[in-house]
Image (cartoon, rainbow, N blue to C red; front, side, top):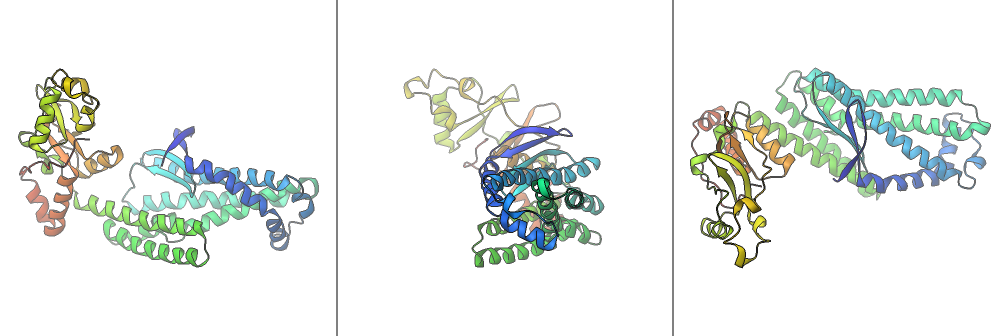
Length: 398
């Protein structure tokens, strides 16, 4: 989702998604129109003694709704900071905290497979929400009614919402906080990948149940949460399975060797490049100069060049010089993560001296994964023989 940075906390970028900007005024309006119901509930269950007439008169409900909505998302940021600060303590990097229409997401670079560390990181967010709820309730009890009824109302709202946020996040809907707590506890006495699969099944059953509730009650919000829980659980399970399968497998074990890679030089003409693309059925090539990669060129790079000018233009003039590369000694799962984060289909591989060593693609990785899953640990030893694979003509360097 598209987002932009609005600030930093403890060095962590705080980002706001476009969906958040759309949902914030809607949430403020929903809270504002429900102020009367909230006041009645607070008076009945919390003994708030709030003046309903004063809080529902004129523009007051929408002022309260706006402040409550902003305060609620601020509480979500603090919730995610709870996760992030504990993760930082264990040496886990935090890319950002992003607000979107379903709440907030702390983007961790990776999750520790040590169950105690994951448990601490997962429980930290709900613990912060519970603390905020307790503090808000304390302030609610201290602030008197009368002229300060709006302030008392807001503290009551924050108390209820933060406690609800903590309780909801602790439900076993992996990869929500409760699901991660469940995986951490399961990982005490079983392999991490197996614990992930068990937590995933529980999370998907939870998502199905939540989706049915949303469907029967015509609640789009619950349906959206159920969908993202189900997809998120499947995605994390797949990632964990791949990480376990690729343990000990390096990029050099599965890449296409340099001798089997079709490449061009910076001095190749665009006309010659297009002719090679037609003959070899490739849509992209690495650009090599003296054994080093200096760029990549794809079919889309040539489209701005008129046919009559193709003999005059060189690859160096149309190629992309900024190339994401990966070391041959890197782990195979690192290559997969790099492809996903950069949105490319293959990565040029360099050796320890910075010399072009080959290419690794999603097809290389998925083929290796299939071999490993079919033959167990024997598959990893087969991969380490370094047998080259012919490049897939349909794959593009970027």
